[in-house]
Length: 158
Image (cartoon, rainbow, N blue to C red; front, side):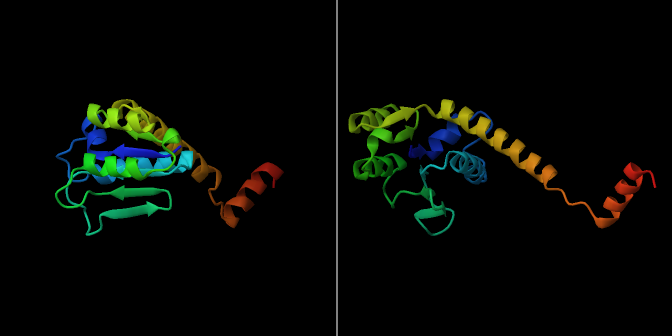
């Protein structure tokens, strides 16, 4: 199920994020990336304003892309353009609290979810993925040959 995310809207709705934080976009992308990897789904995040680099489209990986509108356009305009060109709208979810965008997406056949609701889904996935990664680190911990020999002495009674 592909997602199109109104990025600034999501940040503005997230209780522990601020649009005035210059690192908010990067932090939000990190959380979205964990969600994208866990769901193995295509996600397009559209932010208002200037890109952090010079690219208007910034692929994070093969299924996660950050998009900035062309000069003179808003993120809403860009999202509408994406929705108009998308082929599988019945499976697509638009994440926003913007009423006009939600109405436009529904008219096109896409599903919608409120940004705050989606944010808590992201947080839950982020925490869950973090716990899995921490468990894998512990499971994959390396034991030196010296440690193996000491444990063998303890358990073999040498």
